[in-house]
Structures are given as C-alpha cells and as structure tokens.
Image (cartoon, rainbow, N blue to C red):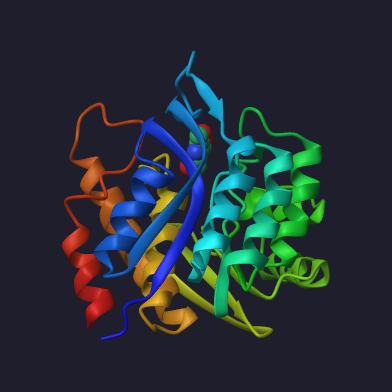
Length: 277
Ligand code: PXL
C-alpha cells in the first residue's frame, strides 16, 4: 500500500467545523498521513460569530519551513485553504517550492468568499495575491463567488452554461491548470461540480438540498484531496467529494440549532468506503 504524506495549510477555527478541524480528520480518514501548518488561530470562524479572537501566524511560517528543509521533509501533496494574511500567500508560494516532493500535487482552495461577498477581513489586495497562488496550483477549487473575484467578473445568482464557460476561460487565461468548480446549478433542485481537466469539461450533477451549511467548501475540498491523493481520477474524486458533502448536509438537517457547520463526522464511514473501493 502506498502511504502518501500531505501538508495542509489553513487556519484553526477552534469551534465551527471548518478549515483544519475538518481537513485533518477527513484526509486522515482517507488513509493519508496529514501534516498541518496553521495559518492563524481563531476562537471560532468568522461566518456568523462575533467577537472572535484572531492570532495571525504569518511570522512563524518561514522558520517552520526552514526547519522542514533542514530535516529533509517533503510532501507528496500540499493543499491550502483559508489563509490569514496577504503576506502569508508569498510564504505559501515559497513552501510550495521548498518542501514539495518530486511530482508533488498542489491544490489551492481560494477560500475567501461566498454568496457574492468576500469573507470578513479580506480585501482586493488579498484577491490579487490569491490570483498569483492559483497560478502555481495543479488544482484550484473555487466556488462561484471566488471564481468571480479571481476573474473580475460580475457575480450572478442566475446564469447559464455560457456564463460558466466564460469564467472557466478567464481562469485558464489567469494560468489556472485544472479547475474543480463547486456549487454550479443549471436546473432547479440540482447542483453540481464542473471539472475542467486539461481543458476538457465534465459535469457531475447531484441533488441540491434546501439547507445550506457553513464549512461545506472545506469538507468538499478535503474529501476531494483525500480521494485524489488515494489515486482516484480528478472526476471520480470530485464525484466522491460531492456525494459525501451531500450526505453531511443531509445529516446536519436532522439536528436542531446546528447552524455553524456541517456534521461531517457521522457519515465519515461513507467517505472511507468510497475512497477505498
Ligand atoms: O470555511 C471557510 C473559513 C475558514 N476559516 C475561517 C472562516 C471561514 C469562512 O467564513 O471564517 C476562519
């Protein structure tokens, strides 16, 4: 059995079922050694809580990288999510170069926006820096809002295939290689994921549940990374991640007052089954 080692760089939101508290268990459950570099520590995520603490860890990054280089530590994949500052993006680009093993797969989730808006704390300068990181990735996983910010395109809630194709063309022109474009709905009651692999378009449609949950982008990206690193094709990994995310949203709908995240734990078994099949 191959035993890949990956590095994920994103924040620790101590409470809130997102970023590292989602990525670490999900990727680990896929049978992959998962190393972490926390970009920041927050008491909760920023989507709906107020008064949260925020400890930016940007200044710790160069020394952590230097230590890994000294130890000869290399990763088979590097996956980035929510990053704590614009300056941090330069350090992450450096980490991509310094500790990527031969054939290292670099996956960037440009986690910075949803529902037409940037998350609290992000600005145009951050978006510009994120464009440069996306160019360095083998896979990016934007939602519709993030794709619009990355391409300076107007965000629409109603759209057609031509609108999505235009976004894909602009992302490709920006230098993005393979694009896993989540939450794309062409018909009422359904949603789906567009996979643009080496310029070839495919689409996996799935049911759209009425309750949307915070943090599903992180669940999706983590499951995609887990399946991809386990050797699934990009399309198969995109499908596995979509089916798993739908199960998480369904499980959350059974719960009262669970507004801040999605219950990914009770259905982890289904993901393990899908990646090991
Ligand atoms: O799920 C994305 C995310 C990650 N980390 C923090 C966030 C968010 C979204 O709001 O606030 C801290």
